[in-house]
Structure formats: structure tokens, C-alpha cells
Length: 142
Image 1: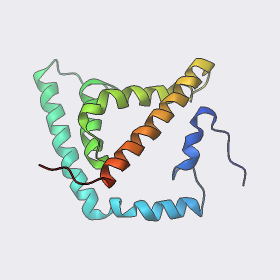
Image 2: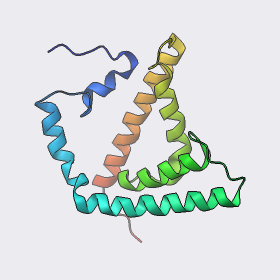
Image 3: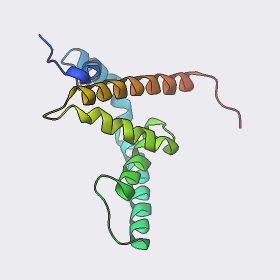
Image 4: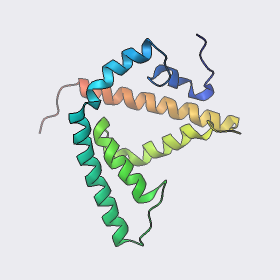
């Protein structure tokens, strides 16, 4: 089967959503353990606490909740960072790189945006390599 040309988003071909069976199935089997009912229940507790914290912030502030930034973004990162073992202090860099990935993926993307998307994918790949290396290294001492 011929792959679609994802342009600057070509790294998606190396992920589960970018693969068809049998590779998709193999990758899905590897990740299934993180989506067991017990794991999802634990994540739900983290998410509920993050939502409560954000709603408390909104209540103390001007009563508004932005859909793409501010407290809502903090809630998204407060729930996903622990799942992937990412420090919440990395939120700003991850937010910026995520935005850069999306720059050229919509209609009308130009060469400069495509370059930013390519660089952001490279940044994420290196960042993930570092996270994996940290996990494989010796445990940190307290």
C-alpha cells in the first residue's frame, strides 16, 4: 500500500495512527497496558483534580476560561504530563512546539511554516529520545 504524503508531518508515518495493520496492531498491543480500566481510573483521578484546580483559578479570576490557552491549557497539560512522565515545567516549550507542528498542516501553509513544522517534529523526536533515555537510566537518588 502506498503511504500518503504527509509533507512536513512525515514523522506521523512512524506512529500508531500513521500505520496500517499489521504495524498498527503491533503498536496498539504494546500500548494497551496503559489503557486498562485500572490505568484509566487512575488518570481520571488526576484529571478530576486538574479540572477542579483550574475551575478554582477561574473562580478566583475574571470568571473566563480560554479554550486554547490559559487555565484550560494548564488543565490539559496537568492531566497529560503525568501520564507521559513529562515535567509540567516543560509546558511552555511543548505548547510552542505543538503550535509550530500545526502551522503548515492546514490549508495554505507556506514554506516558512513547513520549516517550522519540520523543526518542531525534530524537537519532539529528540525530546522523546531524552525522556526514554532518562527512564532507561539508573533511578534518581532521593
